[in-house]
Length: 275
Image (cartoon, rainbow, N blue to C red):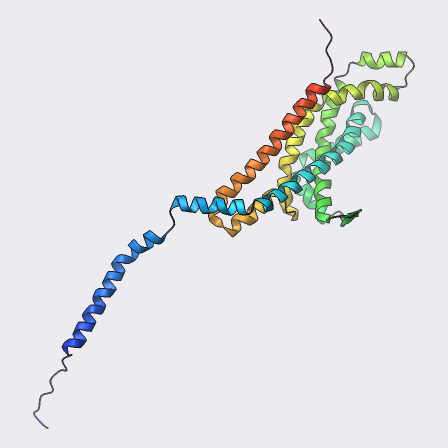
């Protein structure tokens, strides 16, 4: 077979046609892919509608967190009042080591970040789960109430101290002149007036404690802000919508509380004499 040239194999016209069609189809797909993707992608309006629908579907989840926020606010203010009012009385009328101790504790609590107080209350102090009748209270809720309550007590003591000092000393002297003891004069003359005059300052404290409840996420309580975080982790495009909905709940709670305390201030204010 020497001297015979081997010619290259020439593909048939059918094979060439198939290859050309495949190349054209591949180029067409590459060109049309951005257009198709742009048509199938959701528009910003569609995304916003979907995000608000997601928030609305989980509204009860957020509102139940708001219920925990309100409950924690009430219990913390109650603890703060039970500890803060006697502390204010002691700082105003007390003497000696007891007054100095109460003042020092108040300074420490007011100067410590609330998150540090909560962490100490939860991880250092023994805060076990409690059972009140048929209601089970978690240790985290007890720690949150204790931490927020003690912090509130430090501020409420100053509110009541200022209100007690606003009562004229002449009234206490007049009470002593008619036979009251010093304790009776404080109890029956100074305290009723101080409680009425402390409403504006107490109104600010209620608002502060309500917003400070958002810090209890540090000890794992599932209140409003914690549940908001859970939601926008599940759907990252809904961060703004979830935060706006949570902010609206906070605004309604704060506005309603302030209006109620404004009414209480007008209702129980001390009548002023005619000039």
